[in-house]
Image (cartoon, rainbow, N blue to C red; front, side, top):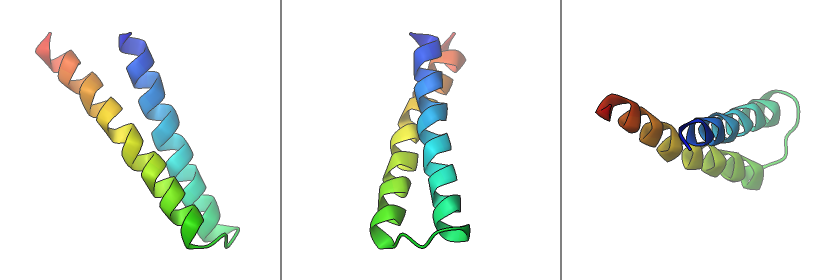
Length: 58
């Protein structure tokens, strides 16, 4: 389960970051795309912090 939280965290943060960069530099999808990718980014952060907290607790 430990690897799964880290994998989910990096996938969500990666998709959010790449989506925001693509939206900013290549396409102009608009505000809805910005909010969607930002929410995906923010959704990945709790998984990352949970993994780090579990790692620190050991």
